[in-house]
Length: 420
Image 1 (cartoon, rainbow, N blue to C red):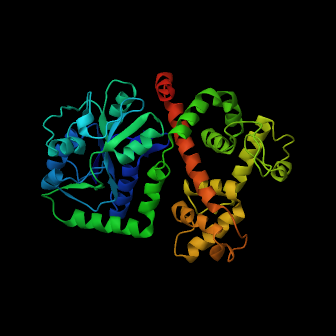
Image 2 (cartoon, rainbow, N blue to C red):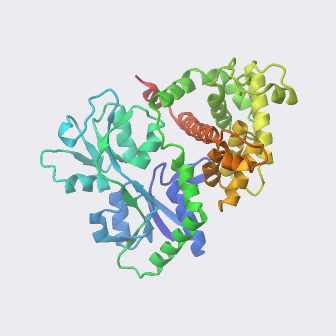
Image 3 (spheres, helix red, strand yellow):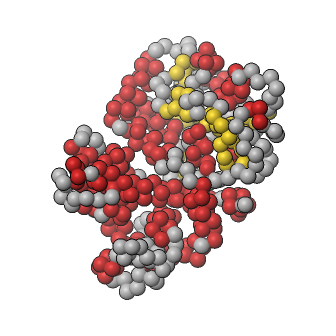
């Protein structure tokens, strides 16, 4: 099966362990469903993709394609699996445009994109904009950040991811209401592939796999906090370098950046941090846990990091082996915050309610129930602030994503991310 897509963090890219991306994982699942070999053909622009589908050199396009009136005249679409809106983007600190009438500068969008179609359909005779085939949506956002461009238009899901790296990107207004996202197929093909596509998406929707995959890539980035994001990026460039060798040394089988993200959530990388409950240090260990781990001083950053790594690894080992990553990692994170016993209570409630106790997206919906007497009175370990554990995990996932991104950038791009 030949699947066309675009390069991008929300579609397809080559990660440290091989191909990754939301669209790639969906396509991989569809190929397995059909029992065929997957061949991914990535292109740089939509203007290259659509002609290949028309010539039947591709079976489907899986590239986060918005279903618009114009595209429905050219192609048929499978079931919608996401919805996004288009946002007018500008740089924080510049005048905030509320409508197209208030734009005062250069607007550029990707040629052949739904953004171009929206501008044309709006019949804004006074508005002038440029279209490019040489840059993708992420590059245009970086141009706005670097003052090379005044405005662009981006899909809300891509913007959610990019603002975690570039908090200066601001939303002026919504260009469109929510639009469905679906795979595109050639109109001249028989209906067999479309029927299989409908069945596949029906199956992964019913099983929770679609929701889990969507949460993996987008669930933790939807809530954006400008102050927190900016403070974290600054801390990662100014404070973290002092402790990075310790995280690398004591990370065991973990990614050191994950351990560092947990530590930032716990203490903001403050070796002398203290909570109202008495936990202390870089990894906020209780006195009992520190004693169990043989940690002499919780205020010594290296000892705290070593103890935190060993404790998190012990939690990870106690998550059932059948649960694959990343769900087992996120479940272990929740246990680091709320305790393994309370996590197991939430998993029991999940199972009672017909959810999957091995999927983080299902368990995270039940953790807040541990605050309600109706539910916690039926559990083994009783009351817990499960909602805080959900926020805790989401925060760490955001911090980790940003650390991975920063680790891959050259210094100039990092400077752009933290520039005033």
